[in-house]
Length: 445
Image (cartoon, rainbow, N blue to C red; front, side, top):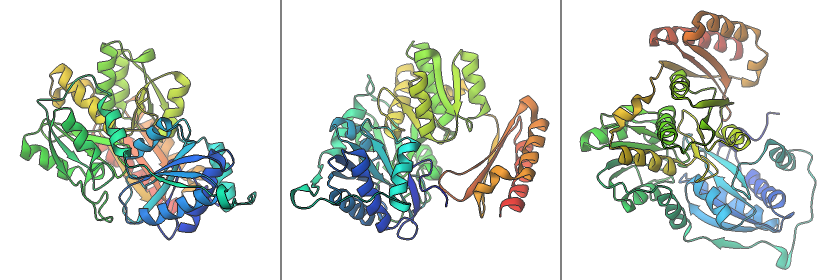
């Protein structure tokens, strides 16, 4: 059986793969393992998906049945839960969200009492209880049953924290915000307005089935069009739970996570505010990012894909800035997980402090052409043992040499293999990817 927990919690099609029964067991396990064997307080938040209420109800029932108290925050960004766990000195947190995935998916991810994602070992214990040979414990009765507390000021607490992370206002900036019909629909526009920015907000409401559909960080078309139409200085786009952000400059050109991190790292380095002169990224970062950081004298430490691995390396190395090309960026002095709002504020603050347009700031790095194809496969686990794929990857690496690179890896959350190549020109990258995709399909489908 494949591992229940992926790189970002438990995820699947809601009410089919991720069922209320499983949510109940995860809730019961969360209270038991994160709290004092059931006597704990767990913060719970969710995004706007239609299935969110169903799964929240089941998960909270599991928490209460196990004797833990549930501090229910309703619809809030994922980083708000990580923050509130620490503010309330709770024993852990749970977010019900499938992040950037389609509306029919949902997910459950857990935070420890210090606001960090759980280590693999603890996830394994929880998984064993939920789906394996599990230790049964006696459920409490009477006064031992957990209680439910509605946290009415969850968003206000989060916004107050985010606004305080920058030391300047944003007056004079016109910013378009695409909230992707997700959890950031209130927090991001309101925080920017409090800082003096002129805000054009789109896709802030949701019917439960439009999250990430043709908008937000999964589709920059709407924010690009709105930036150009409004003559805005900056456009930002979140995914469903707002733990990531992508940007577009005043011309409507994309500024991805690599470029956002390069801009912030370069500014902090110049100001003497980049501890160890180090940033942490993943094996998916663009070659141009690595070269730009090297030229500035900044060390890049690379990890496996997944913000949890970036965070682990940051905590080990002492770095305070790390992230992914996808827009998961962690400013560790401000939050313990990827935070799309904090990242957007940091980027806008650099623009305000330097007086430079984003189109100029982004020239800190030259992006190498990168082609990425997601290949649906029957069994992504077979990738690790496929000699044909391994040989093809080696041949591509020899061909590209120092002028490019290749990466073929399984998705952590979906039945996909991601095939990526970078090269000096897009045609070469596309040709290399096309060849590898054909072999992956033949071997793994």
